[in-house]
Amino acid sequence: MKYLGEEPRFWAAMALALLVKFLLSPTRHPKRAIGGAIAGALIAYFGTDPVVGWFEGITVEDRDIVVIVLVLTGEHITRWLIKLTPERLLRAFLSKKK
Image (cartoon, rainbow, N blue to C red; front, side, top):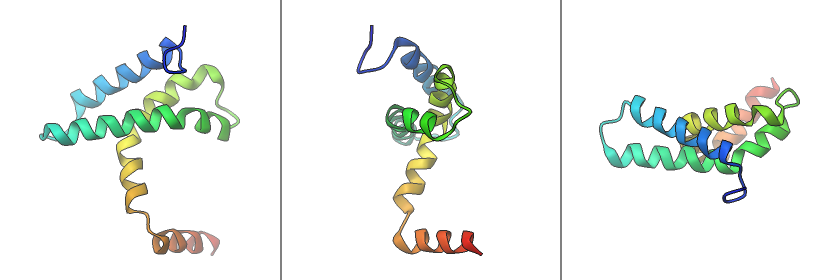
């Protein structure tokens, strides 16, 4: 049985990662911790299948590990995307060409 298009195993991995994120979060402000958890959950929900598809070595059975990693790093990915400007993107692209 699927919930919101995902197996219970996916949601269990996400819940475990969110619990770890809350328990190990260095932030003292509850709003920031909740925002980071929401960002991590959204990145994991929408990013797991693309990540599994991009890397050949990751199998469908490894999805749980991808979910956990994306939940734990999703806040940082979101911050990076928000701060990404066309100038920064161009600079990063040009610096890799050299």
